[in-house]
Amino acid sequence: FLLPPMFHSTRRSSLCGLFLLQSLAMTTRSCKLEHLVLKTPLDGVLEGKEEARFGMGCFWGVERKFWQQKGVTSTSVGYSGGSVENPTYSEVCGKKTGHIEVVKVVFDPAVVSFRRLLDIFWSNHDPTQHNRQGNDYGPQYRSAIFYFNENQKEQAEFTKAAFQSILKEGNHLWPARNESKPIVTEILNGNEHPLFYAEDYHQQYLAKNPGGYCSMHETGLYVPEKIDETIK
Image 1 (cartoon, rainbow, N blue to C red):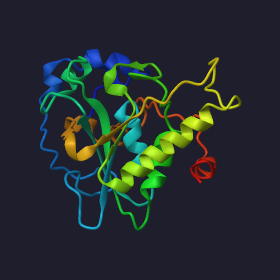
Image 2 (image 1 turned 180 degrees about the vertical axis):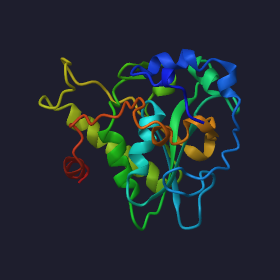
Image 3 (image 1 turned 120 degrees about the horizontal axis):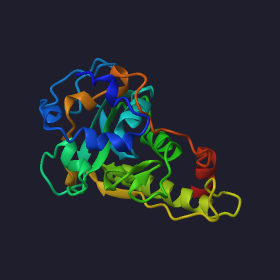
Image 4 (image 1 turned 60 degrees about the vertical axis):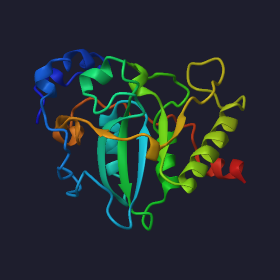
């Protein structure tokens, strides 16, 4: 499903209103598809692989960032952390379901570590922004990590605490701000928050529309080596 050129806006926030059209929500939600880039199933987690799930703004750019990582075997986008079962994109944009736009990442832990995925997560968005990322406003854009085992939970909590301590240092302030702000990233049990796959046209969106909107940006403040020093 390729979106018409009129939808390729540089302001992702304006797209929510455009996608309220019910005709654009009439795509299958089964997600029995093959990854457009990786040529692997979108649904399920194969034996020997692990799942991670991240919310860090508009899921189009987030998904591409993760599928480019070696060791990631599949990615897909959806909604999680809300109170409505199987919501549509229109409903999520309506800010009444409580869901977060998330990316499901299936990875081979023998090739890439969960810690490496966390490095990508912390490096490519501003976790101090509440209910927004850049020009994208709304609770669906809030920062979140969904863990699936105790090791993932511990690493998420450790890196969050370490990053926060670095941000509190006087020489590590967010650009154009007078002071550092607390990290508001939610760390949630993915087993307790089901994933509802987004409509098919959202899956691998930037592979279908290479010039489409992407909110990903490195802040330059998260340095893995400094996080390791802080944790030690």
